[in-house]
Image (tube, rainbow, N blue to C red; front, side):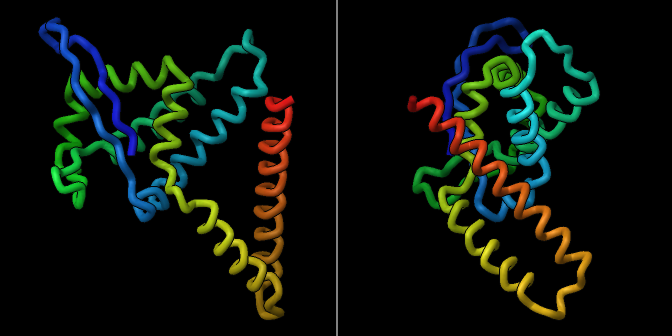
Amino acid sequence: MYTKSVPHKNFLGKPKTQVVHFNLTTHEFFKLLVEFKAIFDWQDRLKDADPDEVTDTAEVIAYYTNFEEILLSAYGVPDESGDHFRKAGRYDFAESSLFHACMEMFVSDPMETSKLVDGLVPENLAELIKKLDANTVALLANEETPEAIRAELEKLRAREAERQAQEQAQKSALES
C-alpha cells in the first residue's frame, strides 16, 4: 500500500491537506499488467533518453492514460481493522481536487511515482514470476506445444533476461 499526505487547493481555491491511499491486491495488479508494462517501458526509456529530446505527444498521452487507470483502480480507503480496502469512491475521487493534485504530483515527481509503483507491486511478485517461468519451461519442454507458441515464449524469456541483466548492471554501477 502507498499512503501520502497531499497538500493542494480545492476547486474553490482553499488550501487543504488530505491523506490518500492506494493499494492493489495481486489479482488487481495482474488485471492491470498491460498498464504497468506501459509505465515500466516509459520509465526504462526515460533512463536512457537524451534530456533535450522532445517526447512524442502520443507517448505522453499513452503514459498518462495508463497511469491514470492505475491510480483510479488503486485508490481507496482501508477500514479500521485493516481487513478491507474500500474502493467504492473511484468516481468521486476522479472528480476531486485531490485526484488532480495527485496526478500533478506523480507526473512532476518521478521519485514519488516510483514510490507509488513500489507500493503497488505485490511483494511476492518475484516468486510468482519464478512459478510462471517454471510453467513456461515445462511448456517449452512439452513436445506437443505448437512451434509458434514456443517461439513467442522464447522471445519473452529472452526479453525478461535482458531486462534483468540491465537492472543488475545499473545496480552494480550505482554501488561502484
